[in-house]
Image (cartoon, rainbow, N blue to C red):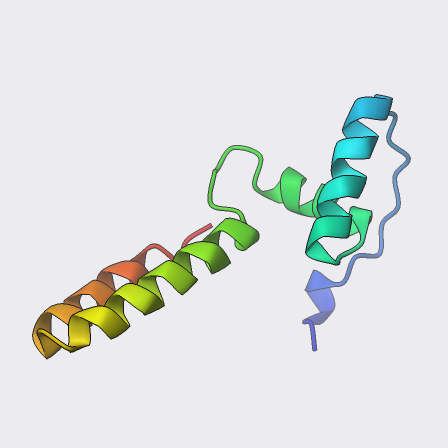
Length: 90
């Protein structure tokens, strides 16, 4: 459940090109989310490349690397896990 201050309650009409609208709708369809969520995400992360979807992909890679590393060195696997955790900043 979202915190009360995280609920989206404000509405604003936005004009955009057909190409941008199509891009947003395609991304939403690919990810199985609403276009509104894609637009909000792009606004919140406009100056940063660490979008939630990219961070999820990164975390999947990091988890796989940690799993592989554990076979060779538990200590190095824990180090890698800590470093990946530090990147969870938007």
